[in-house]
Image 1 (cartoon, rainbow, N blue to C red):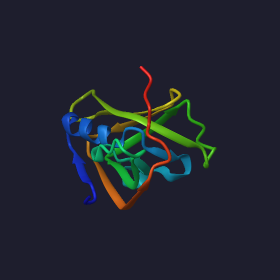
Image 2: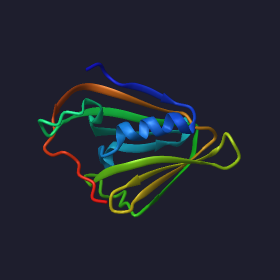
Image 3: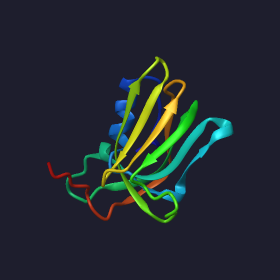
Length: 142
């Protein structure tokens, strides 16, 4: 399967990236905000939902996700000092305030969130290499 490379410039695009990154596993130390560059970036191990393999536990791929035009970052329910802590990404959403500006919200299992205040919505998702067998298939209890 070819490497995924996606760009989101509106809420519809963001929904696609959110779906591809659902259940991504992220180490707290693998994300950060470069204030002078107005960029928030993270490296993740995303679950490869698009393969749809029901015979195995699926696969994961290393991927990078970054938001541009970020002016402020706030977190709730996440210990940013626990650099080896692991987060499970559930979704990414956007709430426009004074369009095109707004807030992108990354929601994690356990209730933690990261809120990014952006001048406009622009984010990129890029796979970084080969996939490997997942240890388990994510299971959502409704």
